[in-house]
Image (cartoon, rainbow, N blue to C red; front, side, top):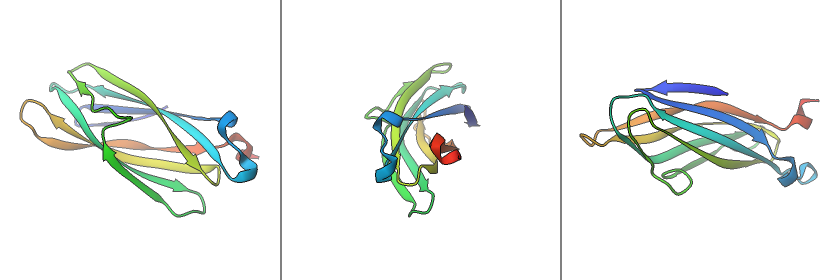
Length: 128
């Protein structure tokens, strides 16, 4: 697991290759990632948006932006956390993602960016 803290918000990431949903012979590799967002600050915050950069070895990078995460814009009181699982398809079986969340402090409406640490996705068969 990797983690990074930005302005009192800790983001941790765990990845897992999904062989059941993958088809290497058709250049289709599926990964899931579990993200835990922990509010270690003294303020109540809300996650408003996400912004991802997805790198697939040998292919054009992709960029994804949108509201919330998996259809939610969670509000986190100090000490609370939010966890979700999402997925990513790669053509090469080797890649990485990095991104940010736009958060808002509820008390004063100040928006700020929280870094999602860069994480890698490697299909085990690509390690040989």
